Length: 112
Length: 110
Image (tube, rainbow over all chains, first blue to last red; front, side):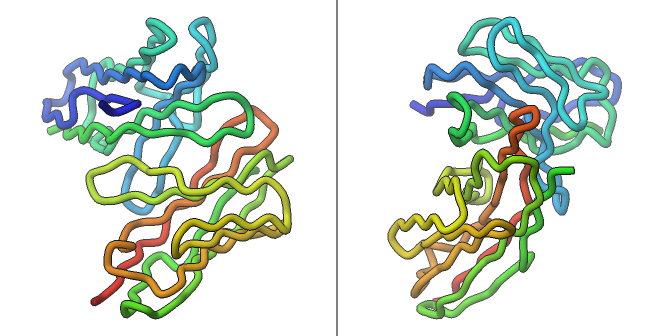
């Protein structure tokens, strides 16, 4: 089983709908992250959490919210989806400082 | 502002033709520089961490090096299975965030 699992893997929805992307991990890491990846723009940080009680905005948090339900679970919500939120979304985890991130296989989200 | 620039954007090599990918960075207090490999439809897969100038890491046909301003990923005698996008990221001391470059898409032709 994958260490970082994202669900769903693919989602097509309509403008204005509320969407939740889920991430769970078995690595035992405290730190979790949500990124979006767009062609030519690379990975951009949306939100990150260093423990269950800690939530921080990243570079592009507008239009998104997150919930850290447990050490192993971190979900990303789009309250009212818009077409320019169409992208590939990745969840990642890391251990303490100086440690690399480990990524899930992503959710491909299309908003029509 | 922390920033990462990778070059070239795309690289096509014949099998066995060695080359290097570049990652230039600006960061306040480097905590680590990370190289990842990303295959289509997959998440980035961790390859190397470099912490200080002069450090080198090797894995099979890949070798990563680090100076105070840039890192190189050297690919020796590449094979078609090395085809992927290679991403570079830095972690700075402010905010502990990671900053990614846009990647180099490598294609190795048999």
